[in-house]
Image (tube, rainbow, N blue to C red):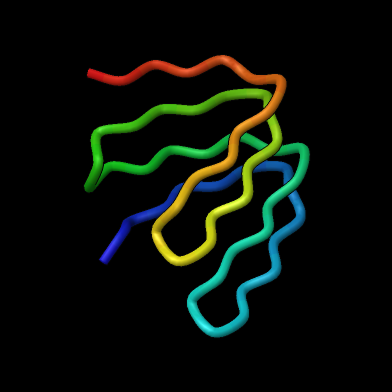
Length: 56
């Protein structure tokens, strides 16, 4: 499972699918920090557009 901290955003969760727009997101189980971007997560696949990404 993925732990999410999300602030200032819109969130739709349906059948384990996420659509998140205009927000800040921290995903800790994958050690991922994403800020100021758009993200679609579908079936454990990522599409990220116009954002900053830090992976450690």
